Image 1: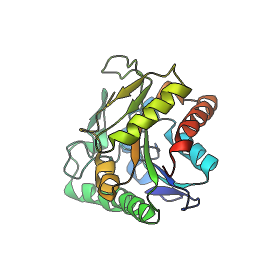
Image 2: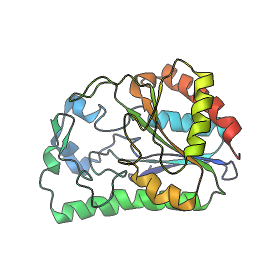
Image 3: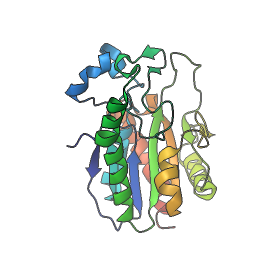
Image 4: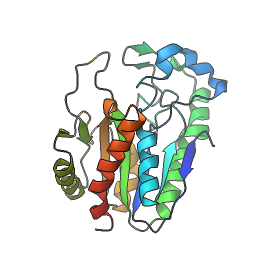
Length: 241
């Protein structure tokens, strides 16, 4: 298993591809946990809880391929541009990240070259092997940030370049799971946090979705299985459409 990314093998002829920028909380030993300990290494600031399990579950259902980042976003955030001030976060939802304070140019470059760039290169190469797949970026969000209000929305769609696919998916999801409230560009907006899709997906003119699942829906195996079933049923008629 590589540190920068984990490739999920599958049939590249299946018209579906999934990826997760924030699927892992892994911090290699050489970084000494960035000076953190306890819950700060496992709570939502370190990763998008549940997303790798959802991605792997959907890949298993359809036999398609996918890719997930293999490192914590506390090291470097692959869904940020290289000039973004939060690329290497010094602070996240009430927690200071000691080793990220005043990082040197050499430290920054090391993380770019060993983690960030290999992941993006692998994602780009994987998409080049596909033939116009429905491409899905999977994220999750905490129900209640330490420094924010409770988020009532259950499911988010980050929509910018492919409104049509999002509308079809929203209709399908509403039919299959009417109890799940859906927010468009909530709790985040595709106009603010969309770097990976903007870099690799939109320029290829691929039909795509950027989805956000509230973490209390996928915090255990039962929840993941339910969400994989719902999402799979919603996506199946859309593949190859």
